Image 1 (cartoon, rainbow, N blue to C red):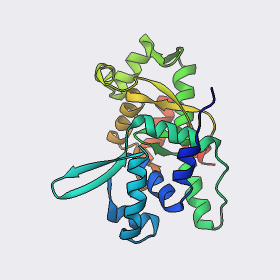
Image 2 (spheres, rainbow, N blue to C red):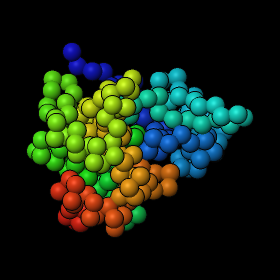
Image 3 (spheres, rainbow, N blue to C red):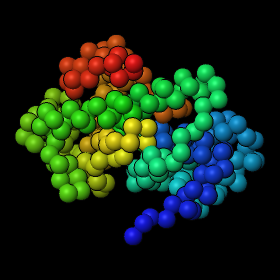
Image 4 (cartoon, rainbow, N blue to C red):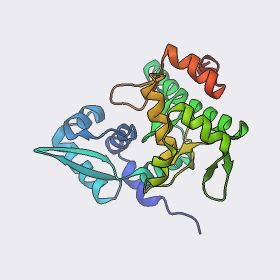
Length: 231
């Protein structure tokens, strides 16, 4: 049976709501003030949009003392939105700034808490062809070689397996129309790359910057040439 995306499409048809959801795809909770600035609307106007997104099940509210922050309702929502983006028409580029931002997002970005874009797709390709992962009916399995490689990378496989979320799922990349690695394992790999300072999050957006150390590390570990994928 076909999935009905109509309710989600209606929610995201409003540009301000789409901007909010895109900002929160970085995985970091943001305040209403920060989201209003990103969306380019007044806080009073954004309040209505946030309420609609919370009621629609896309966002959740995080209370920290007297402060309120918003985040995506969970990893499953992020993966669904990424897949939804893959079947939507491409956004028309109207300026050089938009073109540069879109190019940066395509190279390396976060999809909630795991690595997406050309880099994420290339990393998963390597994990499969090098025998780190084995393809299963719904999730990937980790091979003996993969366990050793993930350990060398600083990934706690046992901790990933204890997580209540899916362990190692393929996630459809909205720019590449191919799969990158999601689930608790994908999140742990992303954390390891940031801890090693191979990747650095950028501002409040989803873009990830590959550092000089990262260029060498990604090439040696995943066989990925950052300059080649950026080009």
